[in-house]
Length: 99
Image (cartoon, rainbow, N blue to C red; front, side):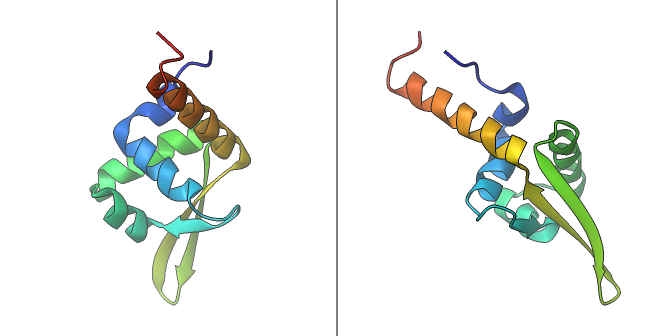
């Protein structure tokens, strides 16, 4: 039986990964949209995105749109796999297959 992923299991990171995994592969969300979806502050969201990026679960792209900075976060293949395993483990727990 797989273990829960400690990186993903933290509530805010779970929200981030759930939001990103709901998108088509290679699609990302802008920082402002993730902030609105999660209800996080700029600093808190940034720190958790950095943790996910260091684990290789998300890719962060910084660009300028006009003169405004724009940060886009995308789930990587590694991150999508880790999220799928985490969700499968949760489903097994819910189904009573793990004690």
